[in-house]
Image (cartoon, rainbow, N blue to C red):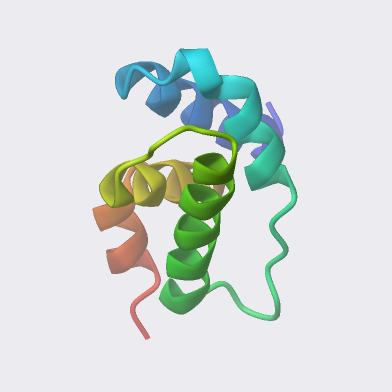
Length: 90
C-alpha cells in the first residue's frame, strides 16, 4: 500500500467515525486541492482545517473546527490531530 493510499484510508476511516459520510465526496474534493508549501507544519495544518470548514460551509455543510482538524491531520498521514501536533513540533 502506498503512502497516499494509506492516508486516504485514514481519511475515510475518520470520515466514517465522525459520521460525515453524507459529505465524504465534498471533503475529499476540498482536501485534495490543498498544497503544502515547503515543510509541512502546524500552521499549514491549521490553515487547511480553516479552509476546509470555510469551503464546506459555502456548500451548506457546517463542520466543527475539531472535526476539520482531525480530517486534515489524517489526510497528511497522522492518526489524529494530537499525533500531528506531536509529530510536527519543531
